[in-house]
Length: 340
Image (tube, rainbow, N blue to C red):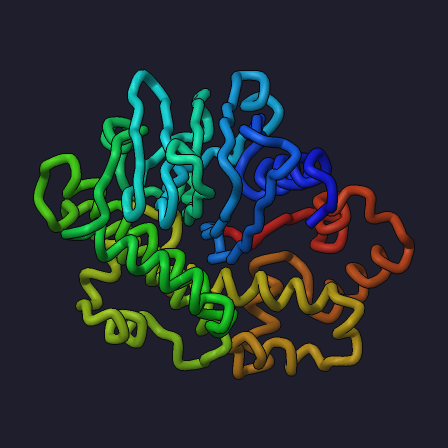
């Protein structure tokens, strides 16, 4: 961390604005200000842990226009005190209490009401990943949530474990941990609003579908990745699995096939893998039959895998990559993605 107080404040402002959202900070004592933080990526989600001197902060309409990650963020206080105000509500937080806020709305906050440093864990959830309607989540913005019992206690313990043990977890498991954090957050919100402790059926279905999507992405290389295997691994019937996908533009098998083709297409266009045989790349992503793969690839993109590789690598070698979408379209013979 930089040496002078002003430099430390600048570093903290830049870091938080980059990691969380653009914000303004006013330390109570700039000369002695100090801070530290860590960040863990969980796929679309992120969890951060910060410790810093007493300060005040705000997010104005100007700062929202400057950058909005369009997230809900959940702050769990581990030490010290903090307060947070948004949309006409205000929460005063002490150790093991938390509050939720919306990055698309102005806010004001402060820490160190007792003169001590504050330590906080922040979970970032894209609004698109929140399995609850915004009208429901908005009711809890800037409301104090004690984390000593119920689902809030489970959530706070989970977040603490994530910050402590997440960096040592296999990279492939981090997205699944992020999904679990979102599910616990949604269930905790439902409980805090006085509804059933268990989330409603649509929330459970949405959460299950996210887990299934993550499972598919992590197991594309397995030739045995079939709808039956997916259903069995999630302890549901095939009928339930098909029902979960019925509102999507493609079914389960088509979704697996499309994702495999996308991985193959990316590898075929990679100069780093130019010496890998086409069939080796296909096999890496679960295609065991060379003829079937070639036929499926041509049906999706209108070009044979080998020809696609030749064109894609030629485009890269020409150095004309100022527009990635245009180059991909040219290499694909005009089609940007497989039909669904």
